[in-house]
Image (cartoon, rainbow, N blue to C red; front, side, top):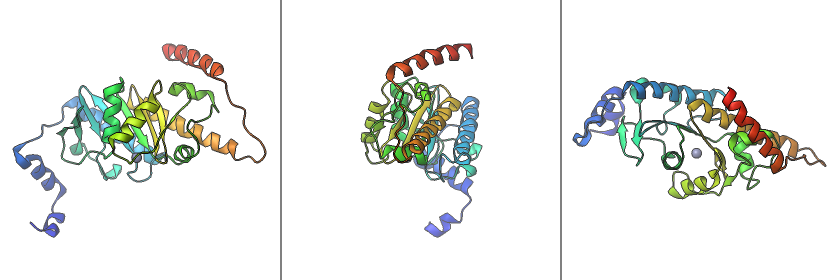
Length: 243
Ligand SMILES: [Zn+2]
């Protein structure tokens, strides 16, 4: 088959063909996985609508049992359908779908193997990425840092998609639910897609705040002390229980 002929084929035909390549027919998504996929696609689309992601430059994953559903590489989120469920096991072997999982899969899997995360959000949000090039840790400009476990660290740069980047990220995540990736972007996780997403939005907002105050000539911002942050951490704990 020539490339031209293949390009002209219906996407569904291509998917069916890939599903049976090598005789390894991948199983269909279970109801719980189909529901999680719908929520994942909604979260991915929201990240574009909220301008945390441009095009397909971010990725989202959610864990269902021992399966990780993840956005595929290079497919615009508005084109993803219920038939496109893409899932891997915790070792990265694809068990659902035929689209290629995101190239940032090593980071997502490292989080699930090392924490109790149920969802992970990765973006190239502009203010957070800008801050990642300036500091090793986001200064304590606002008490919402407590919602991420403390001062947000910057993982040293490594090429995207590599195990080295995943390792640097895990180190920066120690005791935190989010970090910045130097000259790259953000990564947060949570107990749900909504929580992971909200943490990314809060992180981007804090980075924007810090850039804003840092750009006032002749003045430098007041910062919170670790003690002040610890008090907020205590309060947030109580808030979560009441909520
Ligand atoms: Zn990235």
